[in-house]
Image 1 (cartoon, helix red, strand yellow):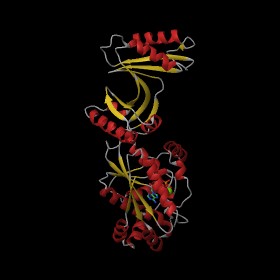
Image 2 (cartoon, rainbow, N blue to C red):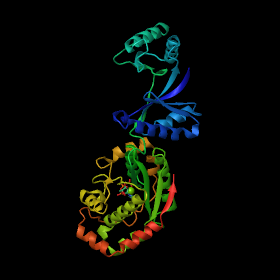
Image 3 (cartoon, helix red, strand yellow):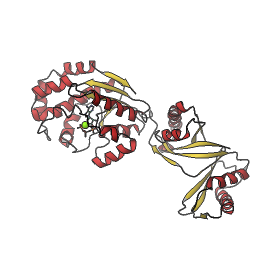
Image 4 (cartoon, helix red, strand yellow):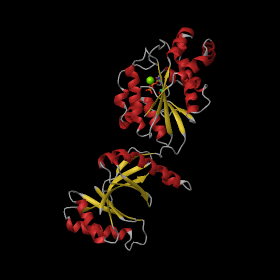
Length: 381
Ligand code: ATP
Ligand code: MG
């Protein structure tokens, strides 16, 4: 008898022939998360197991963040041959519990002599005789005592929910445009949750943006990198581009032209990173550069898909996710972003393409983009 962590996976069960591949990736990601805790990780009969972690609570914290994990239980693992000991372990597990309960057996090993209803009745009855203050309620019990008959018997009461999603690395790569704001870390996290490996690009405009603003973005990248199994962050100097746009383009159009530059440069980084898509934290109508017309205008310069997972989210909904994934506090630090310096007084909410193109024609676009890319500073998190 020993304690193990038993992990159930989420959507992977829907997979057909390629399910083994997704499961291998899930085990790989769990091993990565458990590495510094010296834990053992293995898969057996549709569950992943972790044992011998140097810090069990930290192991659980990390496991519930691994994409692909549906839930984690602290389970007692026992030998099937000794069912009397299983009954006693069930009592031990229910000690200290009050109110109603039910036993929920799952017999994956069909050779086991008792079927699920018989196990429920047997263990439920035994627990009741030993702990008479408990009551049985099969419809809405306060506590569910799970008994899984697999290669061993596993007993547990309180599964801890995981984040769900798919293991990172099973669904291609994407480049996140990461600002220091609330939205883009959430957007990147949501795409990574679907199994996408992420890298990120941040544009900074020193001296108008400070070292502290840069540190803040690196901190945000670090926070989301844990779920993403690492993140390479490209820091791109953007001051010259912003200055030129400011000097030469229509004042109401500086933001939209700047955003088109960001898309073009991000697409170049995406090619370098072998990514198939860009990701931004935009949502319809949140600011002038996120009206339908403005989004259409920025989209035009990107030949690869631009994913905007927050497109239909209200700000409060985004904040709720930011709080859950632990980025909100850092995002709320009051340092400037390159978007907030040089902002036009009356940004065009319905930008006209001919004015955009006329503005861009005045700039040495290729040279500006190459110079920015030459200044790329890569931080690996
Ligand atoms: P966020 O909270 O993500 O900063 P926002 O509501 O402030 O978003 P904008 O500043 O218009 O909106 O930015 C829209 C999107 O453009 C961001 O979500 C992000 O994906 C990208 N972006 C903005 N500024 C930068 C930057 N300095 N570097 C990289 N990407 C940026
Ligand atoms: Mg912003």
